[in-house]
Image (cartoon, one colour):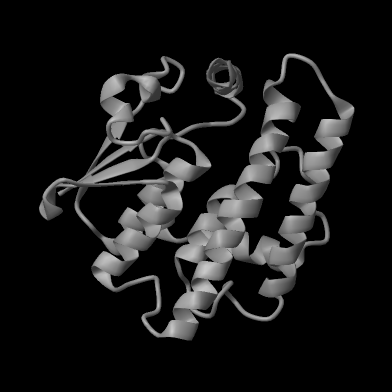
Length: 222
């Protein structure tokens, strides 16, 4: 059994969607970010960086994996699914996974900070991160004009990027004209495993829960 310590964020959903796609048995534990549970000593022993998600593989001598991208690779390699085993195929997937980890996630995350969570509006920062996020989504769109998925077959690269790209409205990013991206967002969003993974550990409505999300994020920024 795999224990998933998580919250309803794009990075958290990356882990839960992969677990659902792979059909692995797991139990999810919600980490209360607003209460800063992720900074408690017991959690820091699992992830010194104090961030979700984290998994504990109880079938592998309680092996701990933190960092969402590392979790995805570990689970894919554990099952032999969603990640090619040939060198070139694996590299293609890893390139687009790293694209999300190093680009899409950090830039959209910073856009969220300055658009939604910062105590004061800083126009330069908002424009900077929204513009760069839009550029990165356009890179995805260009790639998706060449193939149905980012790296050939459906893979962890698609899941990782999708979990962030789907939140573009929350970041205030206009995706008008990115038709290939729109098609891909819809196709992946229609997958039953993806829909199940998005509800872990609880379903979040951005409009209904906006103030709670903002309050939680502001506490973490202190």
